[in-house]
Image (cartoon, rainbow, N blue to C red; front, side, top):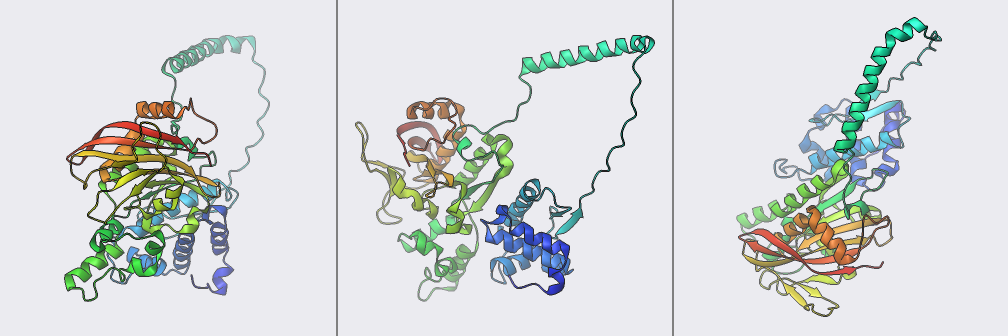
Length: 425
C-alpha cells in the first residue's frame, strides 16, 4: 500500500486502523490488512468513487482492469472475511476502543461509530422493610412466580433445555476457546482443468509462480483467439466443484454455534505464510487442490497418478498391513459409476501451532463421500472405534482413514471404512 499523508496519520480514526492492522487478528493475512487500509483511506478522504467492487479488485488484488466481477468473487469473499476479523478484534484486543469500525453489508464504505458509554446508575435509595400488611398482599404473587419458575425448571429438565451446539469430534481439534477462525480451502478447479489441458503435473511451487497464475506458461506458442480467451478465463476466475460445495455445507451444519468462524477461501488465494499458524480444512486431492501435496509425505495413503488425464488415479498404501492392498484405484473419471476412494486425515501443522483436516477423494465423488461420511454421527462413532478412541479426547488424536464409496452416475453412497492409521507427530 502507498504511504498515507501526514493529515491522515494524525487522524484518530486512521490511528485506530493502524492499531487494528497491527493486531494479532490481522497478522496472518496481508491481504485483509491491505484491504482495510484501502477502504478506510478512501472513505476518510471521501473518495467514494474508488469503493466499487471492480476498483477494489484492481487496486488491492492486482486484477486486470477488464476483469469480470460476475465471474470473480474474490473482493466479496475478502470483505466478508474482513467483517469477521473486525468483530474478532473488537470482541478481543479492541474491546476498550472508544470507536468501532464497521463495513455495512452491501457496501464497501468504512464507518466509524463512537461507543456510547452508559451513564453510571444512581445509587438506589434503601427500600423499606416489608410490613406485615404488604407481605400479605405480595404473598399470592410470590407464590405464582415460584410456581412458574418451578414449572419452567421442570420443563427444562425434561427437554434438556437448549444447550449451545458444539462441533463434534474430530472438528473439536480445529475450533478453540478463543473463537479463532477455521479456514476452509476449497479446490481450484481451474488448476485441475489446466493440468488436463497440458497433460502434465504441476508442483505447488509452480502453482504459486506468477507466470503460472497469469497463464503464460500454459498457453500454446501461437494460441488461437478462442484458446487465448479460455486460458485467460481459467487464469482470472475462481471456480470450485459441486462436491466442494456439498462438503462446505456439511461442515457448516455440524459446526454448530462455531459455524460463523468458518472462512471459505479458494486454494488460489492461500500463501505459504498463511500456514504458519491456525486451523485449516483442505477439500480435494493434490490434483485439484495443490496445497494437499504439502502434507502428502506425512500420510500413509498417498494419491498417485501416471499420465495426467489418461491414467487412473489411485491411493498408494506406502506401508500395507495384513489384509490391505498396496493400491486402491478409483473411478476413471467424475460422473461414472463404480468404486471410488477418499481419505479423511487430521494432522498437526509442521510447527505444531495448529491443526489441518484434509478431505480428499480420487474423484469428486470420493471428496463428496468424505464430507458426507464426516457429517454422519454413526460414521464418526465407527471411525472412533476403528481408531481406538473413546469419547471426546481432550488432546487432538491425529489420524488418517481410507474410505470406499459406491458411486452411481456421479452420486456417492454406501460408504465404508477400509483402513485407518493413528499418526504420531
